[in-house]
Length: 103
Length: 416
Image (tube, rainbow over all chains, first blue to last red; front, side, top):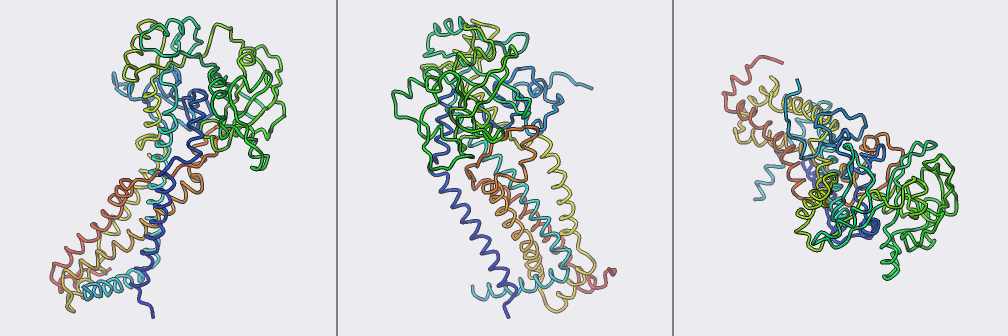
């Protein structure tokens, strides 16, 4: 009968091997810039783009770096944000300083 | 060495038998543990990969964007600003950018309308065609169809548009079809889809609509002498902040945005401290920590009696500590490896399936993108020390305390 320790050590070895293969996959995929990345960079350069197209729900979430200074994200670190993407975004560094207590 | 390995294997055998006696409890712990590692690792992989990709892609964005601010809001930029900025020493070129938003009430989607820079067409005409940038509508046609080379305004042509793949997907529209837009004056304006931007570039182009300058001005009613903002390039990148200061002095109502600021914005977006997901996650992690701590550190009377019996039959304190070490290691190592492997598959092979609803939010147009697997050894080490080490250590300490007391006292301890 196979010993329990042998089964466990084989399982750990198999898991480690899979993780090793995945890390190898990561290393190979990122070693050289793949065509997709080159393509995105070319498009950003050609069209003078400034932002990633991640959140298209509002203009200030679509172009985060170009948003007005008075948009919810940039108003105040604790200003209420009603879009779900607000849960991912933090206030910019320059306004994170608290000027006075609010309550 | 061989005898040492054999001894460890015997201890592992004993530990596994001991764990299997409390099968349901330990398997439950293992699944919960793996799930926590999976979520933590997924967040780590996703945030790191997207930050890295953003920094690589947006490094090609304009060196400086200058906006005009009126009453605290982004306003149209008069072209005379461009001429004045061009006179500043060190400024190489200033180009007006024309872009804006259009809400499509039929599909409830926001589009970004953009005029390709005038130079793009000329530059591209001089160089080899960019075959990879624009392709046929990929979701409707086979990949065997030829890629279309240019995105310049001159090649788009009046009355035509080039659309992002996200728009093509949402509208189920393809090359040659017309999209009816409503201009600022309320008139209908049909524009023909000349081409679709490739799906590989969706992370930057999913909601884009490229059109010619006359079409854009007619669409939004923007006068000839105005643009949305200015893209400034300088001779020496070291002087960027000096030039930005000069622009602000020259035009106090302007707002220069340097490329570094754009990159920093994206660096801080998916930060660990940011938002609801991490707050919810930290509650889950805290619950797990309490559960694991209770399981690992609080020895039950039965376990204490077991230690007493083992000592009485000749086990040494070091053997008991070794057994408890393996007990912690078996659970934490298995859960760690399983969690990390699943997280990698989740983020880099299944397009972050679990995070997608949260990332999409209320967006109708969401890009379908595949992140490049940027994984660092630092991430895995941090995760390992945050998960495996504390659990293993917390199983050893109480066992050591129990193992150092008299076996008789340990066995006589109050029953379960």
